[in-house]
Amino acid sequence: MKISMLLSYAGGLKERVAELKEYEKAGLDVVWMPEAYSFDAPTAMGYIAANTERVTIASGILPVFTRTPSLLAMTAAGLDYLSDGRAMLGLGASGPQVIEGFHGVPYDAPLARLRETVEICRQVWRREKVRHTGKKYEVPLGQDKGTGLAKPLKLINHPVRDEIPIALATLGSKSVEATAELAEAWLPAFYTAEAAHDVWGAALAAGNAKRDPARGPLDVYAGGAVSIGKNREKMRDMARPQIALYVGGMGARSKNFYNDIFCKSGYEAEAGEIQRLFLEGKKDAAEAAIPDSFMAANSLVGEPEFVTERLHALKESGVTSLNVSFMGETSAEKIKACDQLRNLVDAM
Image (tube, rainbow, N blue to C red; front, side, top):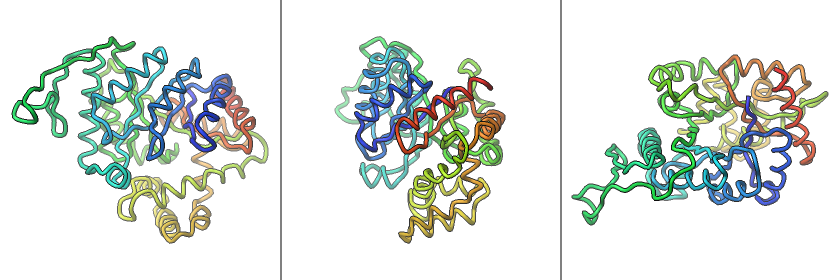
C-alpha cells in the first residue's frame, strides 16, 4: 500500500513543503495538492516538484469547470516534465457553490465534463492532433463557430509519459462507475471498510466490467486520520471539525454530496442532525453529533494492533493505497506517525 496525504495550506505553503521533505523520508509516497478557492494548485505543485525527490505530486483536486481539457493536459504534462515523471492529475467536479459562486461558471453536466476531459487529456499526451466532438467540448471549434479558423493541433513538447495517471474524486454512483471504467485512481470521501460495498460496490462493479484490462486495476485511496500508540483515541476528535464542515456545511441543505455519503454509510439521522446544527451556526454541537463509531471506523487511530486490524479491513474492502491525515500537536509528532504507519503497512 502506498501512503498519501493532503498538503494543508494552514501555516503557510512554504513551511508545509519544508515539512513534506521529512514526510518523504518517513515513507510518504503521494502528496495531494488541494485547490478549492484558495491559491491555485499547479503553482504549488511546481514548487513541490523542485523541493522533493520521490513523492508523486497529485492535484487533489482540479475542478474540470475551471480550465479547458487541453489546459489541464498541458499542466499535467508540464509538471510531469519538471518532476521527472512524478505527476498525477487529480480531477473532480467540485460543487455548484464553488463553481458558480466563485468562478461564475454554470454547474452543468459534471459527469460528461469529467469523461470528455479524460479523453482529451489522453489525446494531448499521445501528441495526437486533438479531435473531439462531445456534449460539452468541441475541439477544434467547428467552422461555423468563432472565427472559423480553428484547425487540429498537437502538443508541441514531447511529454515524459504519454499516459499520466488520472485520479478522479467522485461520490455518486454514476460518477464512481465512470471512475472505475476510465481512471487510474479513485479518491472517495468518508470511506469506511464496513459500508464501502453497500455505498459503492454496485457502481464499482459496473465500471470495472467496462474497464480496459490494459489499464490495470483501479487504485483506491482511503484511510482517514492517523495517530498510533496508547491512549491516542482522543486524537480522532481532531478530525471532527472537517467532517462537520463537509457533512454539515459543504453545499446547500438540499444538495450536499458528502452528507449523502454519510447517510448511505448508515448514519442518515446523524447526518441530518449534523447539517441542522452546522447551518444554525452551532459548529461545536455539530462536531459532537458525529458518532464515535464513525470516528473509529474512518480512522487509523489507536494502538498498533487496532491500526493493523483497520488496515486489513481497508485492504479487504478494496483499498489499495492509503489517503490519510496525520494527527498530532507538533510536526515531529505527525512525521513520527507517518513513519509508524509505514512500518505497519510494510509488515502486513
